[in-house]
Length: 112
Image 1 (cartoon, rainbow, N blue to C red):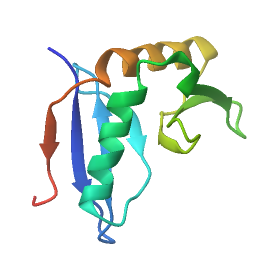
Image 2: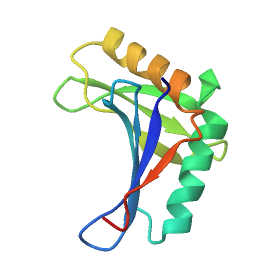
Image 3: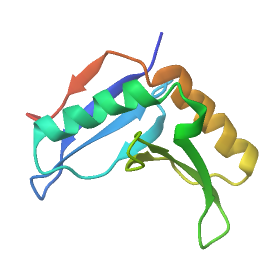
Image 4: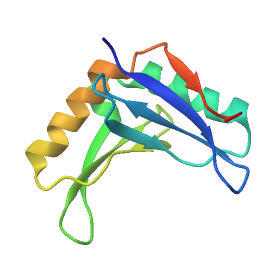
């Protein structure tokens, strides 16, 4: 079973998506978008960029935890990971996005 995207609407009316691994764990969260179509374009950008090593950037947060961002070709951040205790955890997360980010399954939860 492959991963999937969940498209959601926030309480403030904006849209965002999460990429879930096959086990249901969230591995990438998007920024907020003003429209549903913009969020859907963000999903398409993940699908297009997740297979390219150079589009990932591992970073360290102010509390010392590792995380990564996935960027589009224009260098705009598409999504960010959770925080990891180690850089190896961050690398495993990136590998999971590479494996699951091409998923075409999108669960539209915006009407829920």
